[in-house]
Image (tube, rainbow, N blue to C red):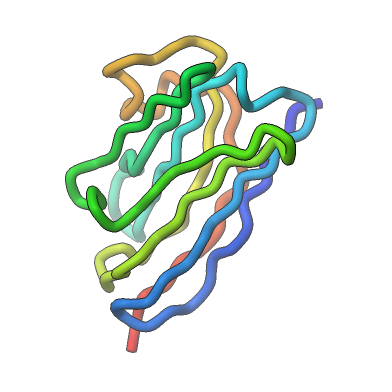
Length: 126
């Protein structure tokens, strides 16, 4: 049974940092494109970042470029999202998702991902 479990969310002040983790069981993350998405109340789910299978190519939404970093630890079968210089508008539930299909430039579309985690809340507030 495939499971993706996010952790690392919480309450942080503006300008602070958090590191989210996406731990997988039932699949090997290195073989999948892994995306991070977020959804704020009343808003659509939006793509944040993606790391590709194999070569580990990465991409980011413009809103987080230069502040967020995605990485993968194959030994731990875990993908991370390091979030720095957090802003109140980063507040959302953050989800990781996995696609066995190489999504390429379509990585930002949620429909391309088969497996999803349950999400972790990130709140940026003073």
